[in-house]
Length: 513
Image 1 (tube, rainbow, N blue to C red):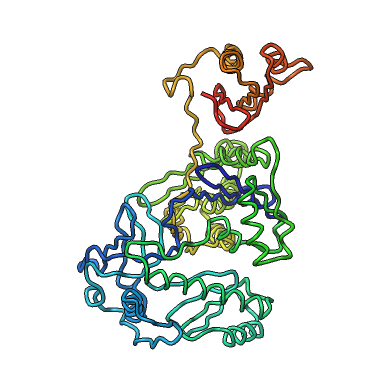
Image 2 (tube, rainbow, N blue to C red):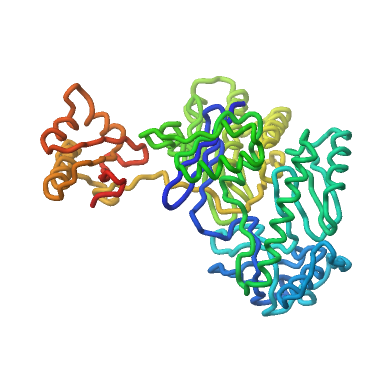
């Protein structure tokens, strides 16, 4: 399978598209400088104890108080709390020489461990979603390329996906030799076949990050960020990079250098696949991603041969309805038709769950199947399709009502790009100016910018259909305008632009108003 990572950088966000065989399967959007991402470590202050919930609300600087349950404190919370107290009081404490306290019980009360107003070291486990603040944990872990480092532990675990006993023993032996005291490790699948040097470097870099966070406890007052997770871009690369990647394409020079430097650190042999995009067409348009986003994130998702999905989102769960459309009208065998549509829908649904990052409870209303073997085959197929999903999930067999239930881990808000277009002229009223006058409107703007303001380099961003109209022919409309107003005019097509929407830019890339 050929995989490509396409990264689009704007002033407000970074969009990361994962392409498998030219099909969009994951879309991640990272707002610039938003903070409060999964993996971030904060020094917070306990705001309120909730004995009825056996939980507490913690102020970490977010607009909504974060939530931590007793079970999220972690077995070594007492040791962690003592360490934070010593560091806050400027005491010289080395983590490696720290004597760990006995683990706390699983059935205790949170009021026995923490109290209102006390500082607490926490890590974000789930981002703020809807009306809920972030979910926290004090069971700290730091993810690297090959291992996950767990402070306050002495246990070495190996990923269940590593099947070879010889490889498990080899990796455990390497880790035991290089791992400092008071640290535990989970060996990731990516560690298979890696050398002792690679794993040692990974562990040392994670230990250094943890020590950096502890040093900041000495100087910072709560609430404050101690250690930010890597950017979403490098996190995705860290988790996904393997031999099947053919290219990583970035359209921003600074992010390109950041990605290249990170690849050079974790996999030097892959550095050459990182490329800087310099085309005039928007990068998502060039790789046919914009069009896929428009079609895949809509309420109605079309399948082959007339079948389609209807995807509805509520606060509590997501509902997906499978419809055969006009397919049922051309086939005589209802059971076979239903099975074919259901199997095709299952493939698209598995893709949609990853693409939209849908989490929580998902209920799928498949077309009714009467044969038990078909119902079982559909269930097995769905499990097979979901096996490549990195998020934790559970797939249940079809109920007697023909419904399939899936639970999928939700750690951040669902991806929901705006795919509907509001008319830029009527602003949703339903009427626009005659489209035949669009070229006249564009020309009036050019006359204003070139004649009245003296701007000699004008870039016009329009819908691809309009761009084609303005640039067609040997002596195009664009060329006639350029000669008439004695300026350089460039027509740029953008699939995200509405049909009668136009934007004007100067030579420096700033929008003209």
